Image 1 (cartoon, one colour):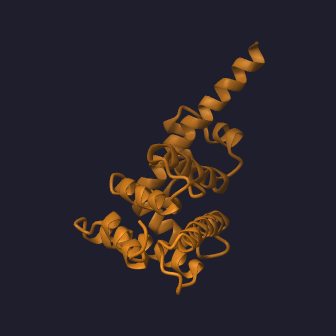
Image 2: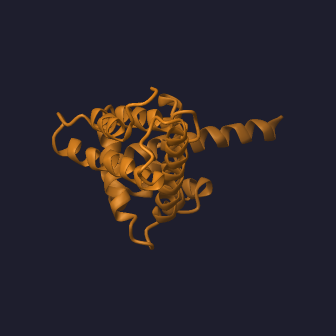
Length: 196
């Protein structure tokens, strides 16, 4: 019984660390966030924090995964679901409520273009998954006659992600820019006049 209680406590502490690290990374960015600050804010020493996460890089990667998990739960986003496009619009709409995380994501994703960045593999995998899910959805919509068939589904999927990411940057510079409406407008452009 004690081992089980200790295990549950360890999981709870790990979740607390992830939640606090997300706040610190969102506020300060990856490079300026310190393990010591995160550890102290959850009542641990830096060595204690490293018991749960072996490095700042591992903690950061877990924070990114946790953010995706929380976003999926709060928006119902499922890239493999029935309408991946609706899911993407939902995520973009949700992002308007968390400006600090949008700024963190935009900054870190740009930094992560460097193959040596600890978030590089995460962002490569994330984009590949989102593009593949959208491509599959667009291909199905083309077969159903709801999306124009004269365009490559993969290219349309990449364009949808580019619109979402580009609108996030515009929104950070001008909060009147409506990210979700722009993404919906892109979807309207690729639809056919056929069955809805």
